[in-house]
Amino acid sequence: MTTILDGKASAKAWRAETKTRVAQLATERQIVPTLAVVLVGEDPASQIYVRNKIKMAKQVGIKSINKTLPTTATQEEVLAIVAELNHDPEVDGILVQLPLPEQINEEAVLLAVDPKKDVDGFHPMNLGKLWGGQPELVPATAAGIMRLLADYHIQVEGKNVLIIGRSLIVGRPLAGLFLAADATVTIAHSHTKNTLELARQADIVVAAIGQANFVTADFIKPGAVVIDVGTNRIDGHLVGDVEYATVSQKAGFITPVPGGVGPMTIAALLSQTTDLAEKR
Image (cartoon, rainbow, N blue to C red; front, side, top):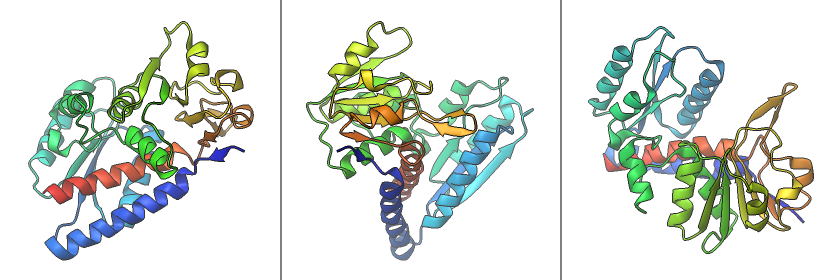
């Protein structure tokens, strides 16, 4: 019998914890955690993400500052906004919504964010701490996945983990978190020759490749844990990187799309913003 990892339910419980912590900060220290979001351009997906983040932040009592710039914004204008937020003592976390328009150097902007306010965990200093085995601020999707596994009491220590995808947003930081939790980690990507063989040996398979229905039942050994990070649209429907209908018959645990990893990402972001406010 396959267990569905319900990200909506886990995220709801996590947000309730965060709401309690936020209320305590207000009562005991008169601090309101504040998240600043920088949005450049009019990418529809980015606008939806930002709206959702701001809505969820409000629900748990976190204050949001939304800095929106036009698609034509220069790098200097974006860097000036980041510098302003870095120096604002009331701002706990800064999130630069990616992707940025092509005229802006993404790396330079992420590097400009104060590492102590880097709630997305993309600054090289925070990525370095993660790979040094001392994770503090980590990319929210990776943090959300680890929390979801913990909520379902899925043991990670000593397990063989295959992560399909090596992005800085999911694959690489997630590998660092699994290593810190004493798992044995393999990362597969577009140049990997034997992804199918590797997947068949894995206790936990994470699909984060951005290719609809890439992982089929052939990839999965019976009883494995399958985490689907993919969000792909086919004929107006949201589907993951895992062929859910067949894989769910074989896996021991599986995340649905939607309703799996997505809600955990925002819950992680709110929790880390509150962590930063507690350190203020």
